[in-house]
Length: 179
Image (cartoon, rainbow, N blue to C red; front, side, top):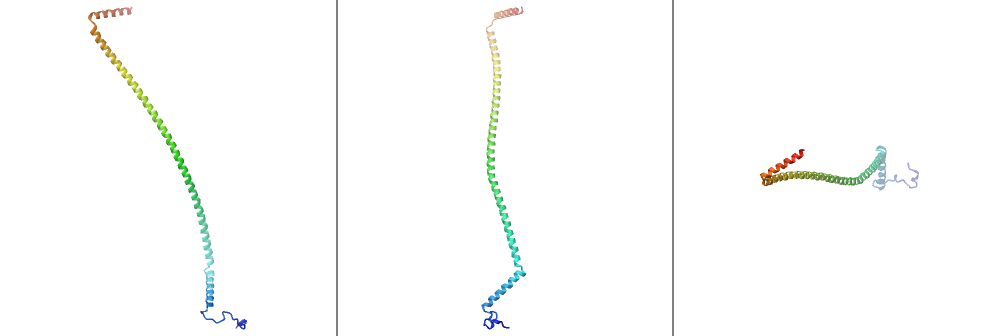
């Protein structure tokens, strides 16, 4: 059967006898191959579903990455805030340590001054005691020497008649006292 338009001498391209090397067949073969391949991918392999699943997986992964990035940025901000506070805290601790060291130095100085004062007072008392002891010993020595010197002078200057006279004066003084 020949179509109605055959008489018009307009034959369809497919009905014409053309050699297999003709570029039209190549295009037709390519279109048929692409259609079969598309049918296989769409109906059998279900490429659309695979691509949709892959797209949703990629979208989910991107969202997770975005959330992880936001979380990391928050953590970075917290760490930077801690570091800035750490610098301040370190400066505060250093200042406090300086103040404590100054107080400790003052306390040590006061303690040393008080200890030095105690040592001076003790030394002063020991010196005063040693001075009194030395004065007492000196007075005893002077008294002994004075007595010895006086005795030596008296023995040298007293004669036997002075001795009798002194005894009689002493006896008179005793009688007067006894009265």
